Amino acid sequence: MGDRPRLDRRSLLLAASGLAVAGVGVPVGLAATSATTPGSPSRGRRPISMAMHIHASFSEGIASYAAHLDQGRRNDVDVIWWTDHDFRVAAHDHRRTVHFDGVEEAEGGLAWTWQASTEGGLTASAADHVDRPRSPDDPGRALRLTATGDGILWYAGKAWNWTHTGNISDTTLHLDVLPEASGPQAALIVEIALSHHPAGPGRPAGQLVLRYRISAGRRAAHTTDGLFGTVDLPARPGEWQRHTLPLLADVRRLWPGLVAGDNSLRGLRLGVSVQAGAQGAFVVDRLVFDRARRAGQAGEELRAEVLRAYEGAFPEVTHHRAYEVSLVRHLNWFGGDQTLPEFPSPPYRDNDVAKTERMVEFLHAHGGVVCWNHPLDVERRDSLARLLVDRNALGVDLIEIGRAPLDDHLWAYDVAARNAVPVTAVGVTDDHDGTDWRAGKERHLTYVWASATDRDALVAALRAGQAWFTDLARYRGALDIEVGGRTAMGGVLLTDAAELTLRLRASDLPAGGSLEVVTGTADLAGLADPTPATRTSTVPARQLRSGWHDLRVEPGVGAYVRTQVRGRDGAIVGVSNPTWLLRQAPPRGVPAARRFRT
Image (tube, rainbow, N blue to C red; front, side, top):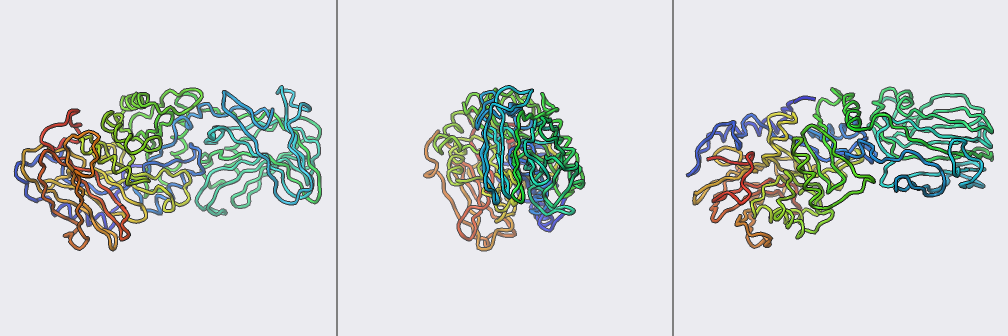
């Protein structure tokens, strides 16, 4: 999964334009520095596109890693970061046993609920929780399911916050079953909805479904029909029998061309299937989720094992493990040693600001960079701006700005920029399905200027703010801000110059689109509305010279500049990170990665 340079036409043109400006004169008050310092020339670097918020089979959605890798390849995306929820990777406080004591039952204070439905032409059906009969190994009640006719009575189960779902790689189910009326035309179905996969040999693209069919008079067998796989299990009439369902082994046998471990137990339901007017009756009890490899760091080791199966399978897409830390305000963690934090029980999310700040400190202590996810989920734009300024963005390095509502996110971000709070704005995919990234509600890619797709190079670019985000479906060009032929986007320049020239890069503008230049005052004005202190100028595409525009800026008391691209319809489809031009260092100083030295 190392660096795989992609020398497409766009990258070659951008590389050529970077060489062309290497000799641009240095503005008054600036001097050239070594290419190894922050803010070095873009020579040798290229735009690298990243989907930075992606959930697969160790999270709660239907996506597989294969589905997302296929989407990455189809959409010409260089890098995917796997941000599965941390407590779901560890299966922390996930459901262990269902006792069938009622329509709802709790475990560790977390509810499990059942819901009945029917399909086909049943003439009678019932789902009753009964005192007798019950499994000899499980006190309490059991569930009797009966159906007559031609169809299926379904009884679907779900744990609080999807805490029955999770990757199947180490999961075996055990279910006690008593067939009361069973035969070739009356069977108990245990159905497991798995993950969505791209098309493969003998199957279309779609979500796999694994069914166990338990009945008297059947022989053990494995059969496959496209996305549906069936395992037949014989049962002795009138006797309790414990059926063990080895999910991984059965998926591997049913779909041998698949990475079997790349599946989630997304949905679970029981059913009585009858045909030709037959009657079926089964009593079930003691459903056990046996997860063998989740304690401590074992879940992360298991995830790494599953991902290793894709080495070399999608050579166009580099992918790295990351986390969405989920039991505080959600934080994506990129880089570092992947140490799982401690989890509270039960796994309730706590939005307390101080707890989130302590989690950011913990993650920083283990390396990498930290992103504040969907920051407006529990804030308004005013209160978000207050946290960005008064609490230094909770100590994070990155923040998800490229998401709906974009105007409110950008307004709060401009308040932070006015106060010289240098936090990197990134875009959001946040996809849990893997079916069609372009159709998703959140479809902003993040680009960085980097020389390679290895993890350290990408983390360094994010930390320095050398990033921009674009709408995946509407704009895929490159943005940059240069001073003296060196990348200054994300950088903080301390200068006494009365005027500076910034060279703005904006390649491949959409037809009918334009570049906007946002110039704001960086006067450390606290929570004041940034709008009156911000001016926006428009540069039509025809006025760009080979994708470049020179801007003269008078820093005054201090200024910042960022750019954005609008489509023909006026929608913002791309946004750069700012460059700051300050007279003196802000009260909290300038992070080392952002110092643009003169």
